[in-house]
Image (cartoon, rainbow, N blue to C red):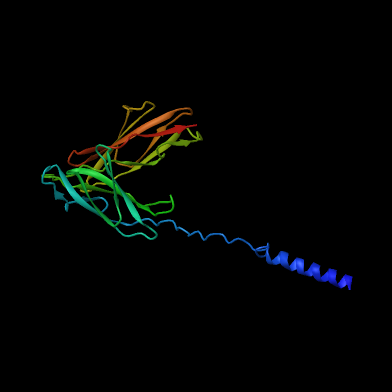
Length: 241
């Protein structure tokens, strides 16, 4: 009888400990659900169209040298807002604007060349998506023929480093003109930051130049149309190893 009483007491004590333990120690804590934020897609530009004259701006009442242009693009997926970048190709100044819709009215100079693009943004992530870059001329009073758009470097890319596998390399660029009347390009090429050495005039958009290792080369393109209008590109540079 003593043994039976001892076993009964031991069982009761064990049951009491389990009931007071607050549940099984094998329970796994549940991790909080973290929402997945998808990266935004790039927008498709609509207006002003690429390589055209924009003549739909509204001339500003207080400043006739400016007009307000409504930039438009398609809505992109997984996007909460947009950042619009508009660059004056004559001055290099950049106007930045924000929008939660697929359009934005921006005041810009009349009779000036511009390029623009749109950055798609989404809350909860730093990831962005950038559209193509389009160029246009904002219509100006009394302009019958527009200067070409400044040339863009294709090769070597600005800031790039090329290996000295040869004593020459080929400069390549691209440009466009609303009036489609470009007749020539003059290339300035030198090892100084303000190149003054002209390599002559060409009708092509490529030119072979002589290079040597250990140098940084600077170059720019002067584009000319049939009316004598010219445009200077930005300064491009590349390093030769």
